[in-house]
Length: 234
Figure 1 (cartoon, one colour):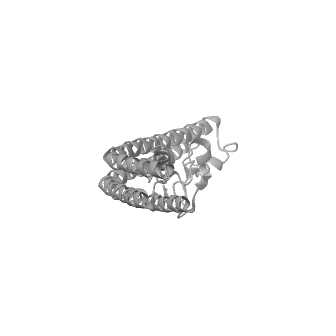
Figure 2 (cartoon, rainbow, N blue to C red):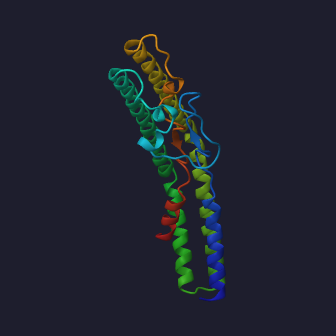
Figure 3 (tube, rainbow, N blue to C red):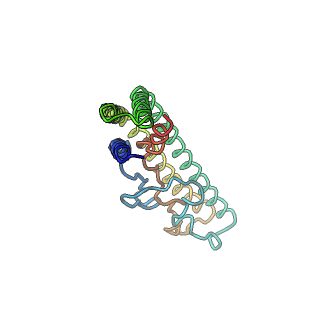
């Protein structure tokens, strides 16, 4: 490979990198803060998107029921925990479904720009493979970079257009998780009133079995790996 070809490929890669740095639609890690019902989340970094037992690490989940009242009371608390977990999973699943639809809309709205990027990339790649002269390569390289910039601009516009929908879906999920936490605490309180009247409910037991339930980071983020695949196989 000639030094000219090597420099050209590096320049193209740098141009692609400009596009790959596009910010995400959900730009920061977003986790549910239960405000006393399940703990708080850290700032920055990625938020776990796992579900089930891995997320159920709050005081409620760790609080042993072995010495709590009667078997009927223990069963009632266990049922309250399971109901809370199910409600949280549903809220998160609904959020992800909503965001997945928004992501599809963004991809549809920017499909024409992506097709143009792929076409310009192929023209440049073909010219490089044919060892075309610099006078041919330079305008093809410029056209490729222009198409990348246009695609990024279109994607950011589509992102802004749909941001309110993402915010609404997130607010709905967080409200559902808050409600589930309150329902759990009330269920435990009611269970004690029914099966152990006069007994003070241990404070730790009132915490729902979850800690920092993540709604995920970058659910509609710039899909860098997918873009690389598009460009690689164009």
